[in-house]
Image 1 (cartoon, rainbow, N blue to C red):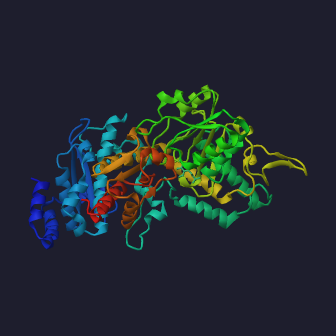
Image 2: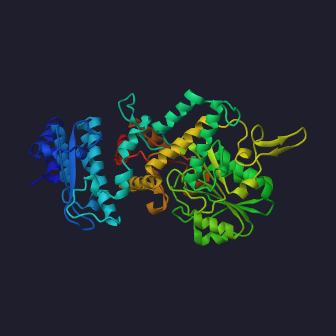
Image 3: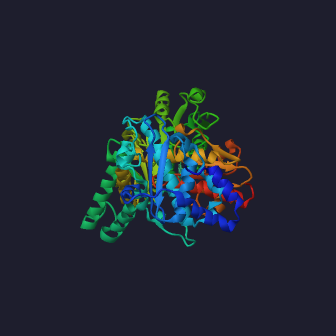
Length: 574
Ligand code: PLP
């Protein structure tokens, strides 16, 4: 009969600190050992200092089975930790495991005092594995592939198809050098600021290096071999981007400097030509300043009016109230594909239809949505889509402008100079066709080519698989954060949002929290995230933001929670 957590707590509390660590060791003595046959490589838990084998067996083929866990290790203290885990999860259904806060158990036993940070990582690795298996089993219930009864879910063949075939987060993580380093204080970074900039996989870094070391030259100029190679590489990258977002042709993809620059290009290139006093531009209060200030400036320069789509109290666009602001005066609807604070995913296809019905165009700020969800500019009937390279695992300094062919035709360039012209005389100049018309001067050549490599990388992993994985992280993070006292998460429920969580905790200023999380190598962002109007609407001046990407793990979520608990301890709020 397995020891219960209550028995462990009782024993533990009665012991003085010296004997508590001995007790941890002794806890493992009664744990059944795996035979050599049971010590299978595929059941090894990653991230542990010692070897840990862990399997989970569904008790029946019901929709939410009890998960029975077995584990063993070659280190005695880890066997003690395993005993605590087994006692904690004993008899739980898959859904209960997902809802259960194991951190509370760890905190009550003050485990961090008795085990090294590496060992703690290993422990989290086990918890992650158990949670992943439980989550996969829950998913398997809704997947078209029905799970077999009494299946050992840890065995790959029983996993839902997408996760099995295309998503191995540890493999993905291993491709990001920055995430695999040991910092000076011995910790490994837990990067939760991909909403600001994503990290780059080795493939992208290698591509930049390849160009610099092997054939760098200016683009669209030299007819010598290096120049020709650069032109080829740039066009190949352009084609990959076109395919990735569903553009009919590569000519509709223009390389720019990033989202901010591109939104300015659209606002002043298209907007200044088409807007007159009395016209209206429709945005939301949740826009990033990059999709806010240019329209405000455009309105003041043209005499147009800037208006705001109504939002629901949880931060979604209120489609039922849209008619109160959308009319035939509306000329531009400019909206984020995904809020960089609330995580809200906007219903682009619906907005695009409603905008077109009144004769307006739709401009989508894809800075946050393109890295997380499949984009189809044709299916969504988008007039202009913009995004940045550095948020899609690519380099900084490069961005993308997509436009419908007729929209690009009717847009004036706002940057003038070399390459973008057709003819120049002393008193007149005419412009080349897109994309050259919008690519004045020397392009960010190396970055634009490496952006193609980043798109290759995303395609290899699969944007839908990335989305699914991030939604699991979002779910786990939302559940765990909500258990922290004084926690307020902003934004809608997870069905309406992507992998961004912004929050505040009573009596902890976001700046203090970010600094304390940093001490635990948990890297988050704090402040207004370039959305001052949204923060005014929320009634706060700053929030803490954790944003996830393909390389984040459930262990990262756990580290965030642990970091917050650490901050609460330091501030004596626990
Ligand atoms: N739009 C959104 C929604 C963003 O999140 C950001 C950056 O965080 C931007 C625009 C600006 O992007 P960039 O700084 O690459 O120009």
